[in-house]
Length: 361
Ligand SMILES: *Cc1c(COP(=O)(O)O)cnc(C)c1O
Image (cartoon, rainbow, N blue to C red; front, side):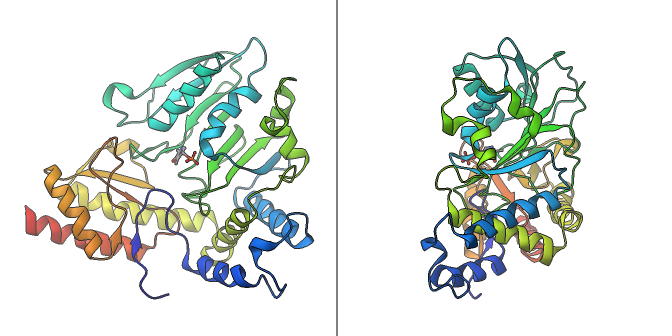
């Protein structure tokens, strides 16, 4: 497809061009059905096939055992910040949270509003969330331990997940799900807004272990219960059909074109290493995350001045590279390297960064 830029947006973010091409066709006529994917009933056999295929692919990619259920929800990852404590903390129990940045802080704010009991067992706020904490111990019997696997705004990521004393992990994986393989066994629930690594904005994937469903209180509205969506296979009400279709295409691309999570993890590592390699060898750029906590998905860095950062973002834009401005809350620059961002795009960015440093040092 002509005229596409290198898209380093943090989310909504780059999608594989093959996915966009197939989707473009389906917008006019879905597989010869005589109607658009947007016009199909969510109760049709064709849509159910899409939905079930998406679930099956996600389960295969993540090697999920049958006790894990996959549902598609609305309201973004942000709605999971309250749904998780509403559903998963039994009367009299409390939950542990690790605060590693903006999104964890927002998750904690919601449990606070609900007046549920919780404890922040570790935080990296003391150094503006530049690192992933290493010292923590968990509350015996805690309902779950909540973590944010990748901190999209601060540019840090859990390289390995914490080992609990049996408390299930709950993770916001919005910005690194399917970027690498991991063992799902210690997780009771995983959620992710689609718009970083799974598809366009508008649907949220929730992976929930069956036994977690037994905790839900009796007084929750129907739509706010995980069990409603699990028992109806995400079809209790009208789901965001087109979004689920887009996720299915992205999963198919990841499985069949890329070759799965080991393959994408190698590519993602190579992409991140290219940029961090430059940052570490060129004093013009300064990484903002501690090296042992760096994110492979969102590379955050500063230039010698805010004026140069503005110039960098503008000039990169002029060179066909978009989305490099840091989050408004932290400033600086950020390159988001989600699955659909190609190695070639990153090579071009690194070449541009070298030239820019030389011209402006
Ligand atoms: C983007 C993001 C969110 C917010 O997702 P919404 O779908 O906009 O609610 C939450 N957590 C993380 C880690 C994110 O990257």
